[in-house]
Image 1: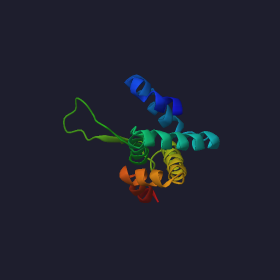
Image 2: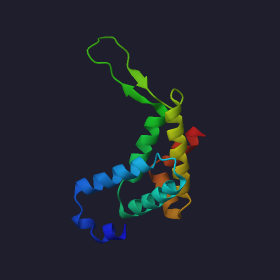
Image 3: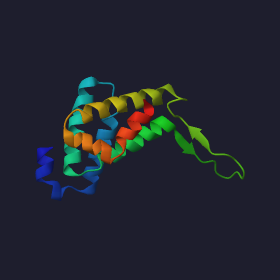
Length: 129
């Protein structure tokens, strides 16, 4: 992360996108050590100003509420919701892992707790509980 901070101006958008995607992928892991490392990396990325918490919030909302699948080509057909924590046990486990990650992230520093508030993640956590 320090190397990234020192070269921040030279990073391409592709590099930043790959980094954010990697952190989002690691957010759903069941490996406890990788989970703690991911929380620390999220803290560093948030300090740099990268919108990782927005990505995590959207991921958590999709896992919690499901994804609306639009039906194409049919008039009068209703939209269907795919997944969601109440319909799919895998989504329920994903929500649990994301809540744990956010708890670890918030425990790191006051700045991290303020970032959780800024991105409305505390509200998401409370709505789940």
